[in-house]
Structure formats: C-alpha cells, structure tokens
Length: 242
View 1 (tube, rainbow, N blue to C red):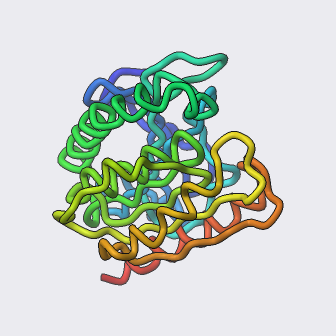
View 2: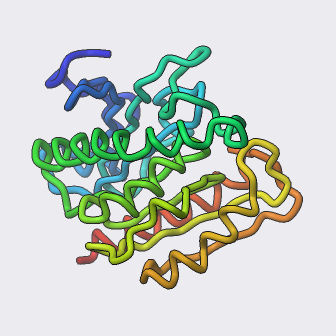
C-alpha cells in the first residue's frame, strides 16, 4: 500500500482511487460521483467504510462510475490469512472451540477500528459519521462498531455476521441504525445466533431491517450484494439531502 497522502488516480468517469495508510491501517480509498467534478476529494461527502471477509482484501465492489457522490473506504484486516487478511485471530468456523478467544479479541479490534474511523473523519471532509458495512468477519466488525463504539458510526449493514450477547451494552451511548441479513443455510457463521440477537438489538433501540435469506449459504454474491447496495444507496441519498 502507498503511504498516506498519495495522489488519487482517475480510473473512470467520476471514480478516483488511491491506496493509503491511516492510523496503522492500510486501505483503499475511493471518491465517487456521477461526474469527475462531483468526485471531489475536498468536498464534504457521505462516508462509507466496507470491511472485507476473512482471506479477502480491500477491493472496490464492481463498477462504481456515475454514482451519487461519496467517499468509500476499504480497510485491510490486521492478520495475514491465505491470499488476503482477517479481522479476528480465528475463523468463525471455530466458534464452538475457540469462542472465548474470539470474544476476547473483539474489544481490542473495536478500539483500533474506532481510532481508524476517528482519524479518517478528522483528516477527510465528510458529511457526518460513516456507514460501516461488511460480510462475515467484516460484518462482525461493522456490527461490533455499531454496538461497542456507537458514537463513531451513523449506521451499520452486517451480512452473515455474529456478535456475542455477553458484550451487548446495558445502556448504549448512541443507537445507530443496524441493517442485517443472513442465510438460513449458512455453514460458516451460524444463522440462529444472529436471529436470536435481533430482538435484543431492537430492545436496545437500534432500528433497522432484518432479512432472512431462505436456503442461502455463506454467500457474498448477488443474493446478498444487491440488497446491501440498496441499503447503502438509500443511506447515501438521505445523507446528501441533509
């Protein structure tokens, strides 16, 4: 990854991208707009932060040209894993055997990512707090930030995620909207714990939709990508009109 402050590269109409390092985290930073003029790195834009799944790496999701303006940031996890990175020291498939280790790692990961979000927001013009989103381990990061560092985020979208109920705050300091979806046939991140968590989230005051994908496994393809993008685009549109 390039050092912080490297110039943006125009890769398409209304798409400028660069690799940077911020608060100890490597990331891909994209500034988007319907035109080159709208893709202005100096403009106060809606901020979206996407966390990849285990063994993946920062990458832009498909074609990004001619979208309503926003800054979209894709950080890399801290643990090398396969051909990519991970956010947690163990796979979520190990929950049955290594739950304590995974639970213990979450607060420190949230502290690091909250510092990253603070540095991002303070060093870039933005239209408020970010929407955070992710799939699998990335979804766990988005969900954990919304619950353990809620003052740092405006909203969260978590796909195929998980969160330990014992870490839920008794009284949240803020209540960002949480949108979530999960396949009922997910063999990697169990469906039932997330389904059981949803009423607890609503009782704590976190509004948002919960979508059960009948018969869907651990899938980051169109079946989850398209509704995730709809949620993101709706949030961006609302943020732009404030």
